Image (cartoon, rainbow, N blue to C red):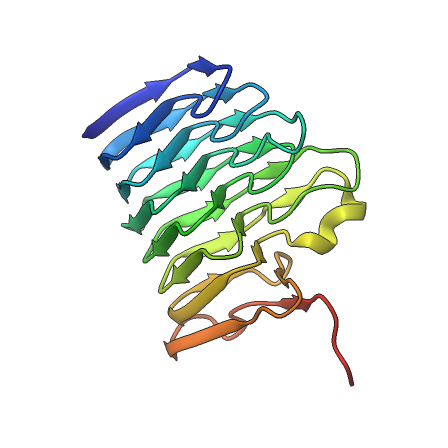
Amino acid sequence: TAINLACSNYANNLGGGIYAKNTNVTMNEGSCVMYNYAHNSSGGGLYVENGSLTVTNAKINYNYSTFTGKTGSGGALKLAGTASMTINGDESEIAYNGSLYKGAGIELTETSSCTMNAGSIHDNINNNRSDEGFGVGVCIASGTTFTMTGGKIYGNMYKNVTVHKFADAIYVGGKLNLSGNAYIAPDNDVYLASGNFVTVTGELTGESSVATLTPDSYEE
């Protein structure tokens, strides 16, 4: 299924712009998912379950999910089940999305996975005013995998600065693999939940400061 435009939609459940289950979705150059809203649910722009999403020089911007009972996650998109996502092309962008709980950019759940080869995840925001929120740019839940071989993550932030300890860039509760010219800005930290770590799967060829790690705890 190819998507050209999904704009200004509203859902009182999963997937404000697009709900995709057991199907393969492609977003090619020039396509966009923007200004969609998932009310009291997850996946403001897209919800993808048990299928695949391929983004190539496309944009998923200005989407939003709200909060009730710890939903309101995946402002741009939520991956569930065995869903897989691939981000290609320098012009691919996941930006200016918002959520009130996990992953204002991308939320990975169950056994889903995402491979980022290029593009950017930037300027997403967690708007929760209380001590909640995990991974503004990307939230990697237990059992899921985020692989970054290229692209940039920067400018993501919590509106309530007291909760930034749970990662501006990436919350790692599952697997995070880094290689190639992947770059995560120094002011966007990677939070490692207890027992989790980053795996360098190949040579790092990008900017010298690849990522700033914040472990749950450490010993000197």
